[in-house]
Amino acid sequence: MRQPGDQAITDGYAVVNLDDAIELTRKHYPQGPEKLAEQMRVFVLESPLRGAAGWCSKGKRPQIRLDTSTSVSRKRFTLAHELAHLVLGTDPDLVLEPFQSNRQEEREADRVASIFLIPDERLRQLVGGQVPVDAKALQRVAKEANVSPVMSARRVVADCGELGLINAAVFYFEKGELIWSYSESLQFASHEPAELFREAQNAYPALARSDNGDGNVNVCSLSDLIGAIHYFALG
Image (cartoon, rainbow, N blue to C red; front, top):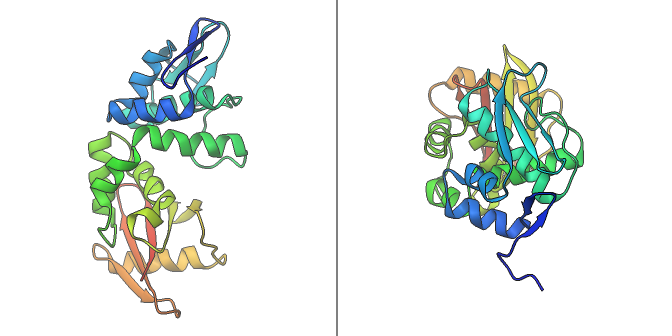
């Protein structure tokens, strides 16, 4: 019988369950995904790719390909995402843009990848109870974890309740156009993201604050480094 921490060898690589994978990446933060790939005996190669940031082939021994033209932080996210598929046992798709797929398997791989990159306890140490969490705080998290500010924003939004926030969302804009948004619990009318974006632009570099009518305060933080605003409803 397998005990916690034991590994089964399948087709030349080590199968690691989710709990053990999370613990391993926590232990080796901030190099968790790299250490997990090594522990699972996965080949990780970099090469020029067209139309994708990376992909994973299973075969007798899984191989993860990363696009050489992407940034270090993007390569690390792609690596973590593909490892998440292997750990979860789901079929990977071509990695195009993080957090934009509608496939449940891709959304779950994104979620697990973010935990591999920034463990729960480290996230709480970095921003837990520090309200509001503004763009500068997200950039500090990104620098320490060697991820993108967008990745750190997404991670905060996913665990907002544990961090002392009532609700949170991140909106990603490029050239003034909303590309994607993410929240665990908030729903927005179609006009609201653009209105929040304008509020954040007008207040930049300070935080934009407004009463949302239910006794809470909307706080918007705009980062010119990532073209995104981070919206938090605070008590």
